[in-house]
Image (cartoon, rainbow, N blue to C red; front, side, top):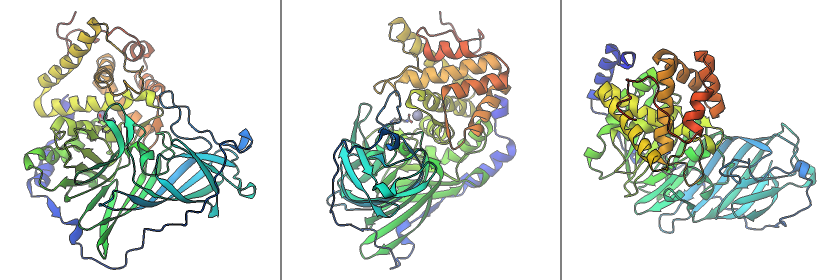
Length: 506
Ligand code: TRP
Ligand code: ZN
């Protein structure tokens, strides 16, 4: 583990950075200007609907789902989104939004018809390449039909503009009851994993179609908007403030957030030119925020272990709502006020490499997110508290799984359903899978594997097979048996290499 101790020079830099009081920025104090664009464009709601079956040839109809084993309806076929430009305004009294989403995409097959995912809300107008398009809706499937003369060829770039309005309704998901756009006393938060993004904008809602984003969000004064990526100073017009964020790195839709609330902003330079940028709800006790002072050090520790931090911004959005969750929204992580412990923050930062930069190709591969982020908890714990604390952590993970095993409740982390995909086994046996790999190949090769995987699939998608292939390539060993036993088979394997981290399980 010694190679993961910060070199002295880093420690000194971090002390210098962390020691001075971070800049506190009043986002609404940037000096109002009056040249805000009018973002509340509403098109006339004049529509020619279409029948569910419009006689299109299957050959030029995009599929209504990408065939995810857990969420077959999520996402759509026939095109690949490059960029989302989201413009919306929010009314605090009604909770309603009015928005225009402009999507830049490329057809991957001939297309006369394709789908987006959108749940609830009312559509005012849709154009494709600026020409009016017909649409119909069925649940969260939005079907768009092009005029014959407007049909798209394979590889043709095209744009979709959807004007819509209404009060977003969250989407039901077992883990939290509700995901997506959540209204709470004091503001709005968006936490969409796995399929909540369709609650607030039209989207190809599957992690396999990542895209860059730009946000233009108008809210009443004095609300503050926090989203992913680089912020620009808000622009005031009358009683309204318009906030812009640019997120140029490809992002999965479940990692997109905007959060509206009463935030103050704390920024400091982090390692390697990364900006640490936090949005904290006003009035939260500072004792809840202490772990965020360690983010610079965490980034340095994880950079040593995983390779360069993949984005130019890192930080937190801590909301003032009793909901207990944290979600690794890209660049700025959403935290409930009671989910701000150091280990949670380490977990969410580790997700920026594993989950956000390298995103699972399908939801079946969720252990690639949660197992890896949980392994980040271990690396941070060892860095902070020493190897013995790390051994305890592994011991606890193993003990909990072994107890389940004895009760016949063991589920391997590679076999999941929507109901079980965020069970502890995915996190902890997922992390133990990495630990077993480490014990098998040794520290040097293990971290070389993690770094190669993080680098090779950066900003894209990867599957479990991709990770196994990298592990075998780097180690030169046949590792199918190890991964099969840990990920896909029922009984909990022994941790290899008796002694280290093994304790006295039978
Ligand atoms: N990925 C989250 C984590 O860090 C857990 C999670 C899944 C979640 N879906 C969510 C959190 C929706 C908030 C909202 O472990
Ligand atoms: Zn996680």
